Length: 193
Ligand SMILES: [Zn+2]
Image (cartoon, rainbow, N blue to C red; front, side, top):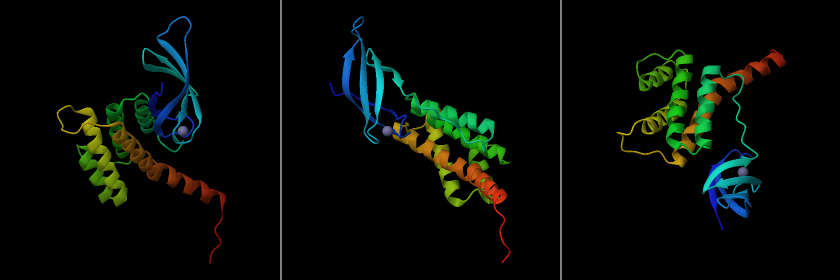
């Protein structure tokens, strides 16, 4: 049986299709299968347990961590967004990405009563660049679709993956890169020329 599953590969960290390569029926319960899946991208093998057609366990599992430079509150929201994607919950993932962007905005002193205004404020103050402003708005719109049933657009797994990637890039620019630069400056002494 050529099953294919879609989830975040624990080896390469990308949301991919995992093809079933072999399967074994549980001797005590024929609704349970154990199988070996192969990531279509990195070709690594993942052990899967399937009960009544649902993926219920896997090895290895994906361990997500947020960089130390990201404040706890923001990191907590981001890791929850990751877990939503890993749990095949694209709408919840998009909504949590939106929340992550807002948490980061508030942390950076964004003013305004809506996320739209907060993003505009950060851009006007020069705290985020025009590309980051665009990404933040993209996540804002996707998150709105994820959280509200009265908007026309639904959120696909691909949309949720985009939202997570944009959010990750935002955090990288806002927190990781400045922290990296500080670490580098503390290690090197620049000669005056
Ligand atoms: Zn992979």
